[in-house]
Length: 168
Image 1: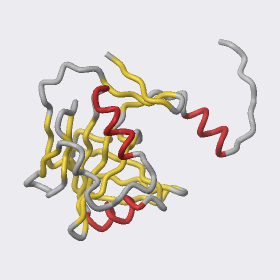
Image 2 (image 1 turned 60 degrees about the vertical axis):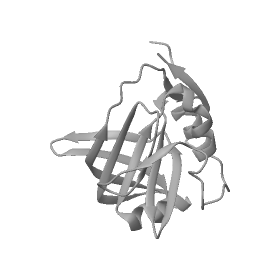
Image 3 (image 1 turned 120 degrees about the horizontal axis):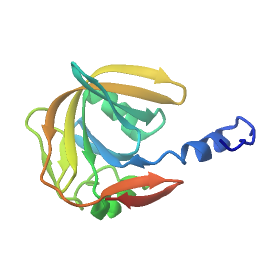
Image 4 (image 1 turned 90 degrees about the vertical axis):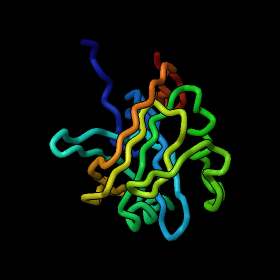
């Protein structure tokens, strides 16, 4: 194993270091107070098979945070590489709250009322079971109450070193 250089434990250094961990990309959605909310995320993880649990990590000062906590339900649409423009749109700071889903094909789910994107690798609906404060984020744990697994043969959208990529 190559000898590693020791670096200062600072937020920006940590961000760059964790950028070396390649992840998939999802759009998280919720519906609160009559408004759809969405954000791009790469912090989506399966937690348990019994019961079926997922978690996502949401920055406390993100406008999605308060909406998803209030709603108590959320969706996760795991994106194929062809949906890179959607990932970029939902990662755009300052985009309008109202109508932000208008430019993206989606459908509303009967189980939770959340919108899920069309043309995805996987889509999940979750009912929040726990919100755990974690520094400047909250870890939101949800029981999976709906699952869509379309027959999709496209490449997965990835996030690595601060950029979108793809994986077959």
